[in-house]
Length: 268
Image (cartoon, rainbow, N blue to C red; front, side, top):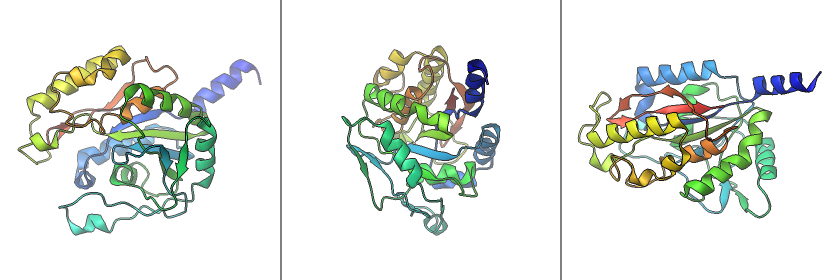
């Protein structure tokens, strides 16, 4: 096989990296959102393994969730129907993936293997729709910082995993101003700050403008769109994992839920 043929085969097998809005557990009852995620999954190559950076796990230094089969879930939410607290997602043992990730991180950066930390709802809620059979090994990687530049570097370190069939997911929400919502219905109109921030993000992503995105704190709709930055931060890990972080990503999902922007995308 020629070098050119090998490169083409590698490109065919390479997994994308994706940023998605995971929402709250009731999104599992939203027919449109579940259809969008199911169609997205069907359009991608099936991953061999999955690595998720969720907005709901901030820990430094870098940490990995438990690798054992049927990893427990973290029910890190309150006020919802009781059935959401008994859901499971019994994914397989992920020890092999943990070794790959650890090997990707230079010794100058510490990485801790957590013996019991489960998958939080930023992981298992979308995974129950993307890959409902729970047959793919899954690990979470913590957010050790909210600094965009550092997160881009972490994404770049993880980039080679995509050539080994690993789907890298940044799980957050494009706007997350929960304290400023007044209408908690799935078809609620987007508040001005949510619509303004989403429009800004659409344009900045469309230009591949990393500098603009890194200065999101000055974006229209702030600070209401993100009173805290953890739901936007996983976006930078995904962009860092792109073959070219400055290339325009492909938007797969847009629109609003509870008035919050669902904008989700994938990078090559």
